[in-house]
Image (cartoon, rainbow, N blue to C red; front, top):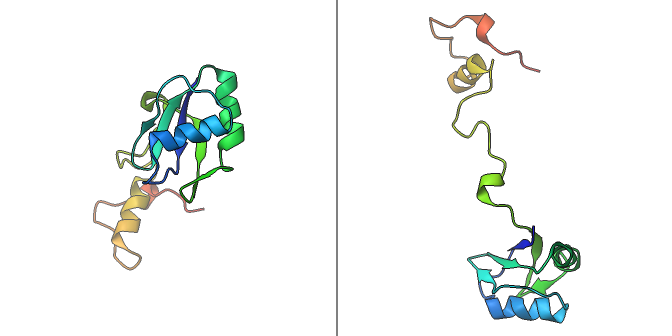
Amino acid sequence: MNKLYIGNVSEQASALDLESVFEQWKIPFSAPFLVKSGYAFVDCPDEKVAMRAIDTLSGKVELHGKVLEVEHSVPKRQRPTCIYGNKTPPPGAEGLSVTLKRGINTPPPSNHTPSTLAPIA
């Protein structure tokens, strides 16, 4: 993968600023920088150049008062997702989530049975 994500980019930083950083460190890039609010993307000619950019720049180069973080860009469809992002509790924890919502001194609902509670470690 040759696309890089550049994080912790200052609001004042421009594509030209990032180009000058890469040129100063003699790291070639094969496309213009795409600069957003606080981050940027750039393509490198090959994997070897991308790895060199990460090793050389990430956490070591400051631009407009912020230290740049450089890493491989991961497409959205390949990023890990939160398995509980839909607010569904993990299997066996249904009773536990009810207990936490009720509070310590509130009696359980009438349809509640202790066997549905997950053990607390």
